[in-house]
Length: 324
Image 1 (cartoon, rainbow, N blue to C red):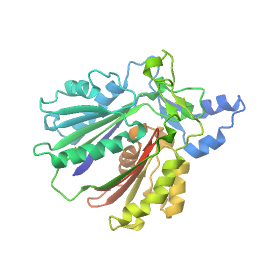
Image 2: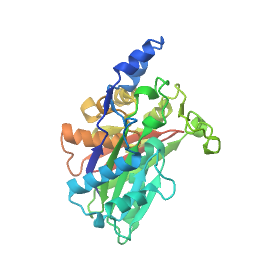
Image 3: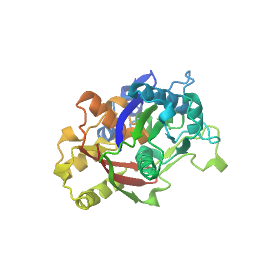
């Protein structure tokens, strides 16, 4: 199984966080602790004047990844749209993308919303579908979020954390030994009220509702899961930490990454972090880290081992081993 083609799309408008930080500092809200924990500088935002949506950005990313990979849309057997901010519920936006790209009739199309663990789950799903399918060979996964329209600008966490963006990648069944090695999940649903949109559900939704984010929620439970289970996870696959070539961790918080790096004595060069320069992109974040790493540092070689850890609101987390 091959994961070799990726593309990152973002709006033209970029914002630095200095203005946001000054705004809160003037309200006597210290931003230094949050800044140190999250690690942010620049974000990409869809402006109020723009007509861009999560769907239109997703279409742009999908077109670009097909163009750059020289893969025809007629060779794509599955289209998965990963988003927490869909433009449509009926039909699913994956069908809209299928139409925009001119996909073939015998294509499976569906949307999933697993919040920030969405791309992780999508990769797990499409890999297993391709492995079990007699005819399907290629899957197109598009992750896209327009979170600026539903985040609270008065919340010191969400005000300077997220980017609007889309990210696309292609998974191909190639008959090689590469691909999904193993995956485990961990869910702690006691946090199901810590991050909410709409705050009171769609049955009580108001026009100007914004996401309710408990500022005490920092994903630390998912860090504990990684600390407690990573060694066992590797051991059951007859591996050690030193045998992993690249660690793709959730880009939500540099503090969480540093905790894992310190505990397992990971070399910083093997644990890329790019949210400082592109903002936090939600579901695509660990895979965007792979994209940026290959663009800025080096190309991953066939046979290298990648360990992915990420989390989604509610919360659930996962560990995945992927052989490149």
